[in-house]
Length: 117
Image (cartoon, rainbow, N blue to C red):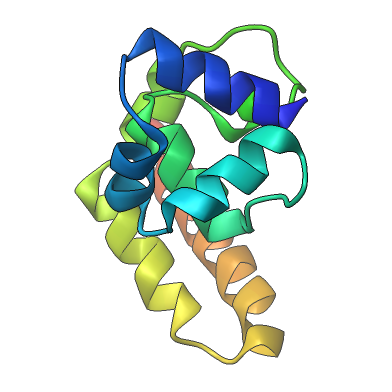
């Protein structure tokens, strides 16, 4: 299913497998494998493909019928959001979940603090 969706989006944009591969940092062969269902893109590549097509990973994975990003999702795909992700990815794998939890707690704290003023 994911391969069919990637191929559909690529054709709609009228770009080649080579162009898509170059845009997301993989080979033409990898895009071909994704589209034929011979191989699934990894998380990072999936996110890059979703960003390239301005859609969600859920849409690419067939979990959503809506290819449009919600307002919230659009805000998340910002430079700041990407910087946060890159920063957390520098941590050892076993520490990443803790970092996300701490970040979420901090964001909730700030929201609560701002709402009580």
